[in-house]
Image: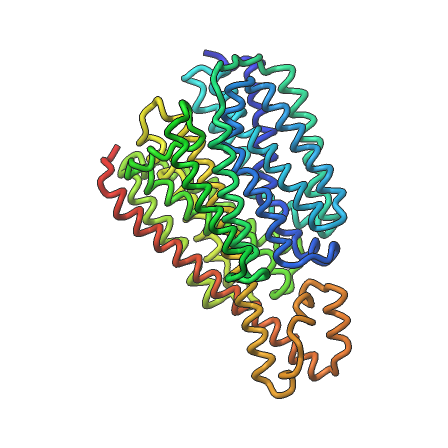
Length: 502
């Protein structure tokens, strides 16, 4: 059956949307040091700028797919694109950290509306024999945008403004909406109910847990508010588990976790997305500690994304011939190699020395994703494929959300503790308050002014201590990510050993 002009237009429209979502995943982290300096925000605020997007996507991705079924995929896709574009305008105009956090959260909501709808539209428009090729083309082009995102982000930040990381979405969204309205036929609406109670309880539980993780250091891990947040997180998740028994189409079907392959597969996806979030902190390290420009930092970060396009097909072939266990073990082994390499060599100012680790990391993630996803979703009955796919995507983004929260908290806490220790153990700096100089690497005015008031020898000691503390914290944060990768490797090796070869 020939590829008609109408189908090509549909494919082009959906590819525009998914490429925009993929691009924004890797575009903004390069600009974080510049945003920190221009908007004068804290490291925790920077983490929220990333995590508001991930958390919003995690919460709404199941709802987006389900509501698209109920109200029509074309309509929901266009609404999602409009929401994404409006949030991009807001992000580009942001004058404060809170403004940017809210814009990113709304962006995530729009992306969660678009992504499931785009996949459903392609499935409905293309016949079975063309469907796989169409989806493959869309994912391949979107992956290209994912790979070049760090470099483009560096170009925007250094040559124009970090705000163009948001404004670049507007022409893509305009083109996507126009083509969708002209080419995509109206889809049928399902006469079913949406599990609002399950959606609300799961969302509140996830939000409380993430908020507690990210604010634990600043509010105090033993403070009443943090303990209350953890209590509500557990309480609402338990409530969601109890109430899903009464829903005809539960928002989050906990019964799927009785399947050992599904629970081990989602654990692998959670861990892979968790460790993937270390890439949020690499550009910050490259710029603040190694002294690279945004363009160079983006280029070096992009090294880790290039293997995604090359290795993914190889991983799929190995999975088809030998089953999922081998590529998963290879993938997490490469990730562990990367983190151990970073632990020993990240404080070297020679970026070429870090290139093997960057390539190993990108290859490792690519080896894991295809076999983990196909095996996990292939282990559930066909009648549960829809809800399983939604849960899979939610767990994927939840892993990323918690990854940013825990890795960010670890980096910030270790850096603060090491800086305090370095200053207090030196007789010449022991009476200084470390908090006065925390923002120096980001060129925050207050920290720069405090540093300028010191005598040159003392200022040199403080700067050296700050650089050493940041590098030390970065090394240990990477090693912790390596431990998570090791846990995932053991899960994959043990639970997937019984999966038959294909």
